[in-house]
Length: 302
Image 1: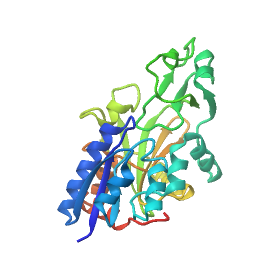
Image 2: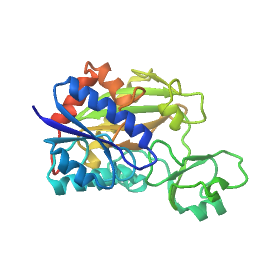
Image 3: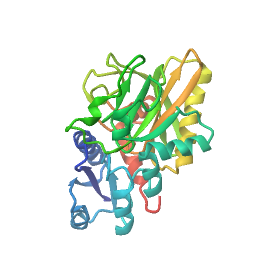
């Protein structure tokens, strides 16, 4: 029986999401017949993994350290086969500016952007409103601020003592329209989901709180938009060098018939409200089968 270590938790802002994802994956792996050890990752993760002696590692970590190539590098050094993307793809996808450079080179449409420091973004408008301020290396919409059209001053939330999302930010053109997402498994785009929410945007609560958003699958879109989103998600996955499961997020502006890729998630959520399990189920793959696929796909030098 293959011994699998499911790592989750950690110490990033996304710890609560990771705990939910990891515990669900661990339960599914047991149902699939694997010998499972659950590890709430600490900075002693190398020792935790050495004690567990797994044949493969199922990565349920989210955010910095778990999703940016750091843990992936540790697993490479230890020679432990692991799920999801490797060191370089994880680091590229986590950095919003660098991933957009890859998208541009691959011919994908992206929003205009500008790198700014926190002080610069708080002192003057980085772009003409409306625009969005995003931390360069965070996930789950942590630290995202929308500057509306007609706003006189830049976002002063950036100067508060509670800001904990770093000093280097991305100012990005605001793209109006419909929120779409596409999961890729291996070399296959699964489906297009439209996400609707009554909140201002698809923030943390909309993503993870029960009832925070509605998922329409398959999205009710013109055929050419559905195909374009499927093609773009796979192109992004391959251009970044991703492996395993990813999920790419888009905005579709119906007035301009413009599909813009926002980001690619190399550690997509596996919670009760998560999109990848929904899309897998849509194409006939149960949650247990999805987790088993991830485990069997695990390798080094990804």
